[in-house]
Structures are given as structure tokens and as C-alpha cells.
Length: 278
Image (cartoon, rainbow, N blue to C red):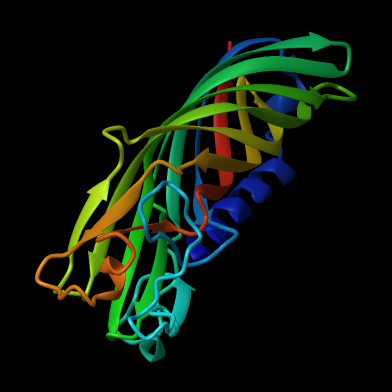
């Protein structure tokens, strides 16, 4: 968070103290441009923890029970990575981290209205963790990270007055490469991560921002971007391993599949942008 505050503060100072050269340079937001962005990305998912398909028929949301009919995951769930094998030890938080992006785009001005299209490639280090605790005791943590993504978005904005400033909204489709990992303190069962042979997923993005021409074709801006990716094809297949037949994962058909309770991966990015307009 201190890195984001530093970047946004620096951008705000630059935006507030427009160089003198900007006063004599006509700004148009009309034509091709290239730009880059750097900022902080955070993970925000709705449901927390894990969900289960106890008979492996593709339907999740079932309860893993012991031979006595007790909920085997009674200790509960958390957002974050497990600190130990017991729920009382708690969890770390998700890893919020920097993201980086480069884009090329084209704007067209219609009076004070500006419309355009852009293509953007980005990389991120933010990680989503979802954890469950069983009565064994044992912990089970699923991790997801958007390694890289590409997006195609439209943007529509208002550029009033002398046209040096632009306030806009943006939205479009995205395609991401997601890295996944699973860890557990359960040493009895077997665990196999199954992503269906494809770690690429589709999603969409929406956001808003403001941009200011500094002169000579250079611009500086602030932007917020929300990304949602559909990640419902990946699960961990839990098998017998060395566990007895009375193991809770095995009671309803010989195995269980588990995955994050939220099948969407949601990301929030707060960015500083810098561009050159041709």
C-alpha cells in the first residue's frame, strides 16, 4: 500500500502542476498512442474457503462427512494461506502486489467526446489463497495467480474546455494465463491438481480513469480497473493414498474433488499511467 500511495501522490502532484509547455501545446486525444501503467493489484473474492464434490459427479457444494456423520470441515474456512494445520492458528492474507501493463490504442474526438479502442498486455504478482481446515487436524490451501493477461477494451470519455484533460470509462474482454497450486498438511490421502489441460481462461474488465496532456504528446493519468475471470474448470482430485476406507474423502464413492468456493477470480487494480500520443 505505501508503494501505491507514493505513486498516486507523485501522479497527483504532476497533474496539479502542469508544465508550462502544456499551456502552448494543443491537446487532442485524437489518434494513435502507446502507454504504460504500474500500480497495486488486490484480490477480492465473494465466497471464502473451499467447496466439495463428494461423489465426483461434477456438482460442487456438498459436505464432506465422517463415518459418524459429522462435518469433516467443521473447523471452518478462511481467505488466505494456512499458518498451521489447525483453524486456531489462522491464515495469512491474500498477496496484494504490483501489476504492470503496456497498451496501444486509438482515440477519435467528436467535439468534447472522445471514443477509442485499445489492446493491453499485463502481468501481476497478486495471489489469491483459499483455505479449509479438517478435523484430522489438517489444512488445505488452494492458490491462484494471474501470471499474464491480454485485453481488448473500448473507452469513452469527456474532454471539455481546451481538451488537455480526459475523464473516461473503459470496458472489454480479457484472456488470462492463471497459475495454480495446492498445498496440504494431510499426508494420508493423495491429491492431484486437475486444470483440464488448460490454464487459460476468459473474463471481462471495466474501469474508469483520468488523463492529462503534459505537452509534446506526453500524458499522465490515474486509473482503476476491475477484472473478473471465470475459473470453474480446475479442481483437486482427492484419492485414497494410504488412508483407510473410513476416510471422510472416500465414503461417498471412493474420492472427492475440491476447489475454491468462488469459481471467479476478481482483481482490483489502482494504476498510474503514462503515455505518448502521436
